[in-house]
Amino acid sequence: MRHLHKLYILFCLIVYAVYGYASLTGWKVMDSLAASTWTPTAQNLHHK
Amino acid sequence: MVPLIEESKPTAKAVTCPSCGGQVDMRALGETVTAICKHCDALLDTSHDQVKYVTRILKRGKEGPVIPLGARGILFDTLWEVIGYLERSDDGYPWGEYLLYHPLKGFRWLVEADGKWSFVKPVKHIPTEFRINEYKLGNKVFKLFHSGSAKVEFVKGEFYWQVRVGDTVDTEDYVAPPQMLSLEKNGNEQVWSLGQYVESKMIREAFGGGALPLEIGVAPHEPFYMDFSSITKIWGLSVAMVLLTQCAYFGSEKKETVLHQGFQFKAGEPDRSRVSDPFKLLESNRNLEVELRAPVVNAWVEFQMELVNDDNGKTYPFEVGVEHYAGVTAEGERWMEGSKYSTALISSVPKGNYHLNMDVNGYPRDFKAILRVDSGVVMWSNLIWTFVLISLLPVLALVLLEFHNIKRWSRSDFSPYDTDDE
Image (cartoon, rainbow over all chains, first blue to last red; front, side, top):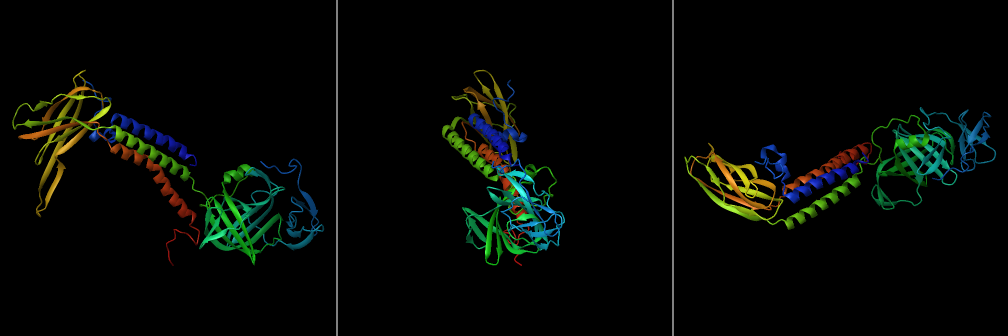
């Protein structure tokens, strides 16, 4: 428990990386997580 | 580490008990003034060359020391030797105190209560009274935890003062985890000492692998088991980084409307598909927000759409729809639900020439839908979920810290959590 803050640093870095990527690409993360309001992205769309 | 002087040689000297004639090992002869004969439990005065019998120890502790006299262990980079042990109690609540000795550093105490340990040293500067029931030592404020008395129940080994079973002093304990400031009052004499909380694992490592008393509850000065200070700092740094990034993102994104077009639909028409005007995206990796406005009344309409890249033929299908219902209740109250507009977001769209294909379902009446497509839309929702995620652990730690403190103060008559006014 005393070293939990090291895991927390890792967690924050991951969250920040996802947030940074989402900001750069204009990705609305919550829409992708919620299946009912899923919206396509240029990366994950089925290309016809 | 500060070793004991000539630690490889035995440091104990022996004196003869005038009561039973047995040999009594003295580990700090010249520094201590009393000793207990291990053979007959006689209290001996060792302050003079001629050892004198004082009295007999009448009452023995139930368990005795779990660290044997003569044991040596390294605590805080110094090798200490256990030379005395006494048990004290306050209104039936017992604890043990081990007297530690180092020839250069002098005496320290190792106090054990409910399986929790403290390393206690004398205080050089007398603490100053800060507020009612609070004392200040250095920059640290200690809060009163307990006020009572300490009665000697059992002694063993040697001590630097005349100790007898039954000796009683008034005590006050002030806490600021991981430290405890203790005051012992005996007549006009006042002695302050400062205890540092020590995990039992550290005691076991220092003095060998013997069984230590079971840990019960939370000690008055036991620190929170999470590094709350570090967690708070990391949280603050993360929030600052995210806010700075959001500011940079906000400054760099320029929302631009690339399409704003109306589409007329007729009731009963067989083909309800439409194609938008072409539009151009000048920058890559920007999002597109498609906003649909349709004046539906107590109905829904859904647009099956495709964003088509005219340069390479790639398509990005998505749906956007609106539904809106309104009416009047039996009591005459108006009600309304749904909305006449809705949005869909497509992220990371490459630059190029595009148009929209759409196929409409529902609402078989005449209506005009308005489509607006914006590029580079700033999203605040990402900032919100990021903030929520990085705040989860600090919030959890804060709740657990509160529980820890409630438990820590549970045996105090001066608990700040005690709301009982009686």
